[in-house]
Amino acid sequence: MADVLVIGYGNPLRGDDGAGWAVAAQLRLLDVASKCEIRTCHQLMPELAADFAEFGAVILIDASAEQEAGTLAIRELAPVAAAGLQVFSHHVTPEALLTMCAELHGRAPRAWLLTIGGKDFGFSEEVSPELGPTISDAVRAIAQIIRTLEGC
Image 1 (cartoon, rainbow, N blue to C red):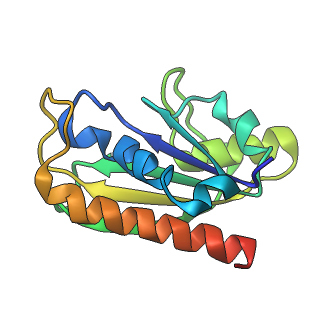
Image 2 (image 1 turned 90 degrees about the horizontal axis):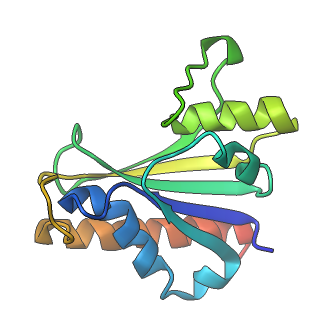
Image 3 (image 1 turned 30 degrees about the horizontal axis):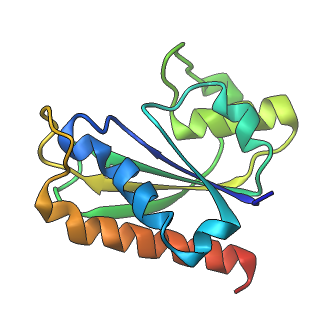
């Protein structure tokens, strides 16, 4: 079993919101795909906390409407204090998932969030052409994280 879980999330039918799915699709074509488990989903759900516990590292990819279009942001995540945890039944933050994982399973994996700034979140199955280079940058960044974790 792979020790790294990669999840691209968002709505692939809403233009740039599908950027996480596009990154996951490109990542599947690389050699590092054999060293990780790659998934896609529409949003982060509380049930993922149990899945997180099975991995040493988790990498999440999402689109951001708050970020400048075509930019890539990468940040390492950490669990939040359980007292400040806010969980909604249909959506949780990456930090909340890490906290739930730590509280329920005694540990949380290392985790990163990569966000890609989008500009068009209308109905479309395609991301904006301007995001192409940023998606490629995200794929390279994830591959580098995985290689570093694997000691390659």
